[in-house]
Image 1 (tube, rainbow, N blue to C red):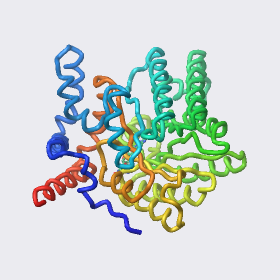
Image 2 (tube, rainbow, N blue to C red; image 1 turned 45 degrees about the vertical axis):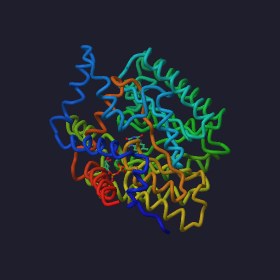
Image 3 (tube, helix red, strand yellow; image 1 turned 90 degrees about the vertical axis):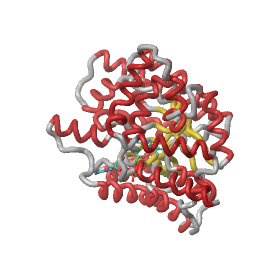
Image 4 (spheres, rainbow, N blue to C red; image 1 turned 90 degrees about the horizontal axis):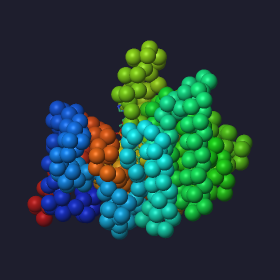
Length: 389
Ligand SMILES: Cc1cc2nc3c(=O)[nH]c(=O)nc-3n(C[C@H](O)[C@H](O)[C@H](O)COP(=O)(O)OP(=O)(O)OC[C@H]3O[C@@H](n4cnc5c(N)ncnc54)[C@H](O)[C@@H]3O)c2cc1C
């Protein structure tokens, strides 16, 4: 199988020298821990007292990781990705707004995303987070399995109705829809909602995808259990497989509350389970559709290899690779060029409200050993290549 992620020329063909320089400077600033830890707080404060820094943020970190403030503004990035054979997944990334008005506004926006995906081939999926359209508290209480207050019962019912309406709209327009995974202490209720909607809408084809975090212990057994239940119930499954984004928070909470951390003790354990989950889902491809949501090269190669070994069409709609906008273009662009189904989450929303998302990206890219090292070295390789050319 001829697939390589080393081709930086292809990975950055869409970036001018100026854009590449900008990305280089941005990723370099992530190596200053003080800036990464305090930058978003300072930006938030500055914006709230009316300092004119909106434009500065928009030209720098926002430009790297987001499509725009609105769907219309994000279209330019989506069209550019589409021209390179990559789909965009409009990700309305407004976070931390925890009141009913905000849930309703997000719900209305998500309906627009689904309708946009229904009419534009550039958008192969829609996506949402349950906590964007409903109460974190109610999800937590339901996940604990205890009794709910009247308010929590009402909030959970409202959330459930919204999830149902989004999935129904997606099914009506034949749009595949992803449900993101969140913190373990609210995830049980999210999983139950997701399973109920997979049962309802994944009869003939897969419309609804749930997310499985493989940094959690016991997820392989959970996938096996869900596969058995779906086979018995006569419906199909969609799984977006990710490693998981809340590791520090999970470990901290477990230590504070004195329970065993639900997260694997080592990266090797997470990697092993991730690849095992990919293989397990692939073995059940008659009724499981897979999205490999990862920036990990070995796991991306693994899915490509499984498809090649089984002599399946690279464009088989059951298999998708996905990365985040502004990251791991060497994986996305090279996979797309090789003919695989690839999509990138394209976050959008008003600058101030997207700050928590941008803060997470800065954190994630701040370890020189990890993603920042990877992104920087790829950018440097491409800058050197261009100089020599
Ligand atoms: C398209 C897409 C969708 C996503 N959706 C979600 C989502 O819905 N929910 C969600 O939680 N995350 C989501 N993520 C983020 C994802 O969970 C990871 O945080 C991120 O992609 C980094 O993991 P990786 O597989 O790319 O690669 P890698 O860089 O190889 O792995 C890093 C990850 O490994 C795990 N890890 C690192 N160190 C250790 C350790 N010491 N012990 C145990 N595990 C460790 C952590 O999960 C860490 O994020 C998504 C990512 C993508 C690309």
